[in-house]
Image 1 (cartoon, rainbow, N blue to C red):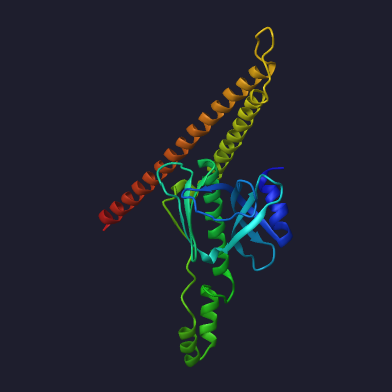
Image 2 (image 1 turned 45 degrees about the vertical axis):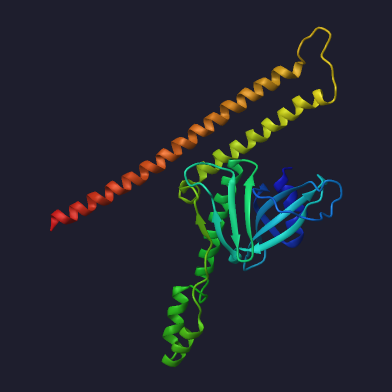
Length: 284
Protein backbone atom coordinates (compact mmCIF):
# COMPACT_ATOMS: atom_id res chain seq x y z
CA UNK A 1 0.00 0.00 0.00
CA UNK A 2 1.47 3.38 -1.00
CA UNK A 3 1.64 6.52 1.12
CA UNK A 4 -1.39 8.13 -0.53
CA UNK A 5 -3.58 5.12 0.28
CA UNK A 6 -2.38 5.10 3.90
CA UNK A 7 -3.09 8.83 4.29
CA UNK A 8 -6.54 8.36 2.77
CA UNK A 9 -7.33 5.51 5.17
CA UNK A 10 -6.03 7.22 8.33
CA UNK A 11 -6.92 10.88 7.75
CA UNK A 12 -9.65 11.30 5.12
CA UNK A 13 -11.87 8.21 5.22
CA UNK A 14 -12.88 8.78 8.89
CA UNK A 15 -13.99 12.30 7.91
CA UNK A 16 -16.05 11.00 4.97
CA UNK A 17 -13.61 12.44 2.44
CA UNK A 18 -11.72 10.91 -0.48
CA UNK A 19 -8.17 11.86 -1.43
CA UNK A 20 -7.47 12.75 -5.06
CA UNK A 21 -3.71 13.35 -4.95
CA UNK A 22 -0.96 13.89 -2.39
CA UNK A 23 2.56 15.26 -2.82
CA UNK A 24 5.46 15.15 -0.35
CA UNK A 25 6.90 18.64 0.12
CA UNK A 26 9.45 20.67 2.04
CA UNK A 27 9.53 24.41 2.59
CA UNK A 28 11.84 26.42 0.35
CA UNK A 29 12.19 28.93 3.16
CA UNK A 30 11.98 27.12 6.43
CA UNK A 31 9.92 28.73 9.18
CA UNK A 32 11.37 28.99 12.68
CA UNK A 33 9.19 26.92 14.99
CA UNK A 34 10.13 27.39 18.67
CA UNK A 35 8.48 24.17 19.80
CA UNK A 36 7.53 20.90 18.15
CA UNK A 37 5.36 18.40 20.07
CA UNK A 38 7.40 15.44 18.93
CA UNK A 39 10.46 15.44 21.15
CA UNK A 40 13.94 14.67 19.92
CA UNK A 41 15.04 16.58 16.85
CA UNK A 42 11.52 17.30 15.66
CA UNK A 43 11.92 15.55 12.33
CA UNK A 44 8.74 15.23 10.27
CA UNK A 45 7.43 14.77 6.75
CA UNK A 46 4.85 17.06 5.15
CA UNK A 47 2.25 16.20 2.51
CA UNK A 48 -0.12 18.53 0.66
CA UNK A 49 -3.30 16.64 -0.17
CA UNK A 50 -6.27 17.42 -2.41
CA UNK A 51 -9.51 15.73 -1.33
CA UNK A 52 -13.23 15.84 -2.01
CA UNK A 53 -16.11 15.19 0.37
CA UNK A 54 -18.45 12.26 -0.27
CA UNK A 55 -21.52 14.25 0.76
CA UNK A 56 -23.44 16.39 -1.75
CA UNK A 57 -22.81 19.09 -2.65
CA UNK A 58 -19.20 17.97 -2.82
CA UNK A 59 -16.52 20.25 -1.38
CA UNK A 60 -12.95 20.42 -2.72
CA UNK A 61 -10.38 20.73 0.08
CA UNK A 62 -6.62 21.28 0.37
CA UNK A 63 -5.10 19.74 3.50
CA UNK A 64 -1.63 19.81 5.05
CA UNK A 65 -0.78 16.43 6.60
CA UNK A 66 2.32 15.67 8.68
CA UNK A 67 4.03 12.53 9.93
CA UNK A 68 6.22 13.19 12.97
CA UNK A 69 9.33 11.21 13.79
CA UNK A 70 8.75 8.59 11.10
CA UNK A 71 5.93 7.10 13.17
CA UNK A 72 2.96 5.38 11.57
CA UNK A 73 0.07 7.81 12.29
CA UNK A 74 -0.49 10.87 10.10
CA UNK A 75 -1.77 14.14 11.55
CA UNK A 76 -4.01 16.69 9.84
CA UNK A 77 -2.56 20.14 10.51
CA UNK A 78 -4.35 22.71 8.32
CA UNK A 79 -7.20 22.62 5.82
CA UNK A 80 -8.61 25.09 3.30
CA UNK A 81 -11.51 25.00 0.88
CA UNK A 82 -10.95 25.65 -2.81
CA UNK A 83 -12.78 28.99 -2.40
CA UNK A 84 -9.90 30.09 -0.13
CA UNK A 85 -7.24 29.05 -2.67
CA UNK A 86 -6.49 32.24 -4.58
CA UNK A 87 -3.51 31.17 -6.70
CA UNK A 88 -1.33 28.20 -7.67
CA UNK A 89 2.09 29.33 -8.94
CA UNK A 90 4.06 26.77 -10.95
CA UNK A 91 7.21 29.00 -10.79
CA UNK A 92 8.56 28.06 -14.26
CA UNK A 93 6.24 27.68 -17.29
CA UNK A 94 9.04 26.43 -19.56
CA UNK A 95 10.37 23.33 -17.79
CA UNK A 96 9.62 20.72 -15.15
CA UNK A 97 10.72 21.89 -11.71
CA UNK A 98 9.81 20.75 -8.19
CA UNK A 99 9.00 24.22 -6.80
CA UNK A 100 5.50 25.67 -6.49
CA UNK A 101 3.58 28.17 -4.35
CA UNK A 102 0.08 28.08 -2.87
CA UNK A 103 -1.60 31.39 -2.04
CA UNK A 104 -4.65 31.29 0.24
CA UNK A 105 -6.76 34.08 1.68
CA UNK A 106 -4.89 33.87 4.99
CA UNK A 107 -1.68 31.99 4.14
CA UNK A 108 1.17 31.85 1.63
CA UNK A 109 3.39 28.76 1.39
CA UNK A 110 6.47 28.19 -0.76
CA UNK A 111 7.04 24.47 -1.35
CA UNK A 112 9.46 22.18 -3.13
CA UNK A 113 8.25 18.67 -3.98
CA UNK A 114 10.40 15.55 -3.69
CA UNK A 115 10.60 15.50 -7.51
CA UNK A 116 9.45 17.56 -10.49
CA UNK A 117 7.25 14.69 -11.72
CA UNK A 118 5.32 14.51 -8.43
CA UNK A 119 4.74 18.27 -8.49
CA UNK A 120 3.49 18.08 -12.10
CA UNK A 121 1.04 15.28 -11.21
CA UNK A 122 -0.24 17.32 -8.26
CA UNK A 123 -0.79 20.52 -10.27
CA UNK A 124 -2.34 18.66 -13.21
CA UNK A 125 -4.90 16.85 -11.04
CA UNK A 126 -5.59 19.98 -8.97
CA UNK A 127 -6.19 22.09 -12.09
CA UNK A 128 -8.77 19.71 -13.55
CA UNK A 129 -10.41 19.14 -10.16
CA UNK A 130 -10.81 22.92 -9.75
CA UNK A 131 -12.20 23.24 -13.28
CA UNK A 132 -14.71 20.46 -12.63
CA UNK A 133 -15.68 21.97 -9.27
CA UNK A 134 -16.36 25.47 -10.63
CA UNK A 135 -18.19 24.13 -13.69
CA UNK A 136 -20.40 22.08 -11.37
CA UNK A 137 -21.13 25.21 -9.35
CA UNK A 138 -22.25 27.05 -12.48
CA UNK A 139 -24.42 24.15 -13.70
CA UNK A 140 -26.55 24.05 -10.54
CA UNK A 141 -30.14 24.86 -11.71
CA UNK A 142 -31.15 28.27 -10.45
CA UNK A 143 -27.90 28.63 -8.54
CA UNK A 144 -25.33 31.39 -8.59
CA UNK A 145 -23.71 31.61 -11.98
CA UNK A 146 -26.39 29.51 -13.73
CA UNK A 147 -27.60 31.40 -16.82
CA UNK A 148 -30.67 29.20 -17.25
CA UNK A 149 -31.75 29.61 -13.64
CA UNK A 150 -31.16 33.36 -13.68
CA UNK A 151 -33.13 33.79 -16.91
CA UNK A 152 -36.12 31.77 -15.66
CA UNK A 153 -36.23 33.65 -12.37
CA UNK A 154 -35.99 37.02 -14.14
CA UNK A 155 -38.87 36.14 -16.48
CA UNK A 156 -41.17 35.10 -13.62
CA UNK A 157 -40.31 38.00 -11.33
CA UNK A 158 -41.86 41.46 -11.48
CA UNK A 159 -39.72 44.48 -12.51
CA UNK A 160 -39.40 45.57 -8.88
CA UNK A 161 -38.36 42.11 -7.78
CA UNK A 162 -35.84 41.94 -10.62
CA UNK A 163 -34.27 45.22 -9.50
CA UNK A 164 -34.09 44.03 -5.89
CA UNK A 165 -32.62 40.72 -7.00
CA UNK A 166 -29.89 42.41 -9.08
CA UNK A 167 -29.01 44.62 -6.12
CA UNK A 168 -28.72 41.69 -3.69
CA UNK A 169 -26.95 39.13 -5.90
CA UNK A 170 -23.21 39.57 -5.58
CA UNK A 171 -20.51 38.98 -8.17
CA UNK A 172 -19.60 35.52 -9.38
CA UNK A 173 -17.29 33.63 -7.00
CA UNK A 174 -13.59 34.17 -7.62
CA UNK A 175 -12.00 31.07 -9.08
CA UNK A 176 -8.51 29.75 -8.42
CA UNK A 177 -5.84 31.26 -10.67
CA UNK A 178 -3.08 29.06 -12.10
CA UNK A 179 0.01 31.04 -13.12
CA UNK A 180 3.44 30.05 -14.45
CA UNK A 181 2.19 26.52 -15.10
CA UNK A 182 3.18 24.55 -18.18
CA UNK A 183 0.50 24.39 -20.87
CA UNK A 184 0.71 20.60 -20.96
CA UNK A 185 -0.50 20.55 -17.33
CA UNK A 186 -3.51 22.76 -17.96
CA UNK A 187 -4.27 21.87 -21.59
CA UNK A 188 -6.22 19.11 -23.29
CA UNK A 189 -3.43 16.55 -23.86
CA UNK A 190 -3.19 15.52 -20.21
CA UNK A 191 -3.70 11.74 -20.12
CA UNK A 192 -0.40 10.93 -21.82
CA UNK A 193 1.48 13.42 -19.65
CA UNK A 194 -0.03 11.96 -16.49
CA UNK A 195 1.12 8.46 -17.47
CA UNK A 196 4.63 9.74 -18.22
CA UNK A 197 4.90 11.54 -14.88
CA UNK A 198 3.61 8.51 -12.98
CA UNK A 199 6.28 6.37 -14.67
CA UNK A 200 8.94 8.89 -13.68
CA UNK A 201 7.76 8.87 -10.07
CA UNK A 202 7.71 5.06 -10.00
CA UNK A 203 11.25 4.71 -11.30
CA UNK A 204 12.56 7.46 -9.03
CA UNK A 205 11.16 5.59 -6.05
CA UNK A 206 12.60 2.31 -7.32
CA UNK A 207 15.99 3.98 -7.68
CA UNK A 208 15.84 5.25 -4.10
CA UNK A 209 14.94 1.78 -2.82
CA UNK A 210 17.82 0.17 -4.69
CA UNK A 211 20.28 2.81 -3.45
CA UNK A 212 19.14 2.31 0.15
CA UNK A 213 19.50 -1.46 -0.18
CA UNK A 214 23.01 -1.09 -1.57
CA UNK A 215 24.09 1.28 1.19
CA UNK A 216 22.53 -0.70 4.05
CA UNK A 217 25.09 -3.59 4.06
CA UNK A 218 27.93 -1.06 4.15
CA UNK A 219 26.32 0.80 7.03
CA UNK A 220 25.82 -2.48 8.88
CA UNK A 221 29.52 -3.26 8.69
CA UNK A 222 29.32 -6.34 6.47
CA UNK A 223 32.66 -7.35 5.08
CA UNK A 224 33.40 -8.55 1.60
CA UNK A 225 33.75 -12.25 0.91
CA UNK A 226 37.26 -13.75 1.25
CA UNK A 227 37.49 -14.33 -2.48
CA UNK A 228 36.97 -10.61 -3.07
CA UNK A 229 33.96 -11.21 -5.30
CA UNK A 230 31.03 -8.81 -5.36
CA UNK A 231 27.83 -9.94 -3.63
CA UNK A 232 25.39 -11.72 -5.91
CA UNK A 233 22.80 -8.96 -5.55
CA UNK A 234 25.15 -6.36 -7.06
CA UNK A 235 24.71 -7.45 -10.66
CA UNK A 236 20.92 -7.51 -10.33
CA UNK A 237 20.98 -4.01 -8.79
CA UNK A 238 23.05 -2.68 -11.68
CA UNK A 239 20.66 -4.24 -14.20
CA UNK A 240 17.65 -2.65 -12.50
CA UNK A 241 19.49 0.67 -12.32
CA UNK A 242 20.31 0.62 -16.03
CA UNK A 243 16.73 -0.34 -16.90
CA UNK A 244 15.38 2.43 -14.69
CA UNK A 245 17.70 4.97 -16.32
CA UNK A 246 16.75 3.81 -19.81
CA UNK A 247 13.01 4.05 -19.04
CA UNK A 248 13.46 7.46 -17.46
CA UNK A 249 15.26 8.70 -20.57
CA UNK A 250 12.47 7.25 -22.69
CA UNK A 251 9.92 9.11 -20.57
CA UNK A 252 11.83 12.34 -21.05
CA UNK A 253 11.91 11.80 -24.82
CA UNK A 254 8.17 11.14 -24.80
CA UNK A 255 7.69 14.34 -22.82
CA UNK A 256 9.68 16.34 -25.37
CA UNK A 257 7.69 14.72 -28.18
CA UNK A 258 4.48 15.68 -26.40
CA UNK A 259 5.67 19.28 -26.11
CA UNK A 260 6.48 19.37 -29.82
CA UNK A 261 3.07 17.89 -30.65
CA UNK A 262 1.27 20.57 -28.62
CA UNK A 263 3.42 23.28 -30.29
CA UNK A 264 2.58 21.93 -33.74
CA UNK A 265 -1.11 21.88 -32.84
CA UNK A 266 -0.96 25.55 -31.86
CA UNK A 267 0.87 26.45 -35.07
CA UNK A 268 -1.62 24.49 -37.17
CA UNK A 269 -4.50 26.29 -35.47
CA UNK A 270 -2.87 29.66 -36.11
CA UNK A 271 -2.33 28.73 -39.77
CA UNK A 272 -5.96 27.63 -40.10
CA UNK A 273 -7.19 30.89 -38.54
CA UNK A 274 -5.01 32.96 -40.90
CA UNK A 275 -6.18 30.99 -43.94
CA UNK A 276 -9.80 31.47 -42.87
CA UNK A 277 -9.33 35.24 -42.50
CA UNK A 278 -7.68 35.47 -45.93
CA UNK A 279 -10.48 33.43 -47.50
CA UNK A 280 -13.09 35.77 -46.01
CA UNK A 281 -11.12 38.82 -47.13
CA UNK A 282 -10.79 37.82 -50.78
CA UNK A 283 -14.25 36.29 -51.04
CA UNK A 284 -15.73 39.74 -50.55
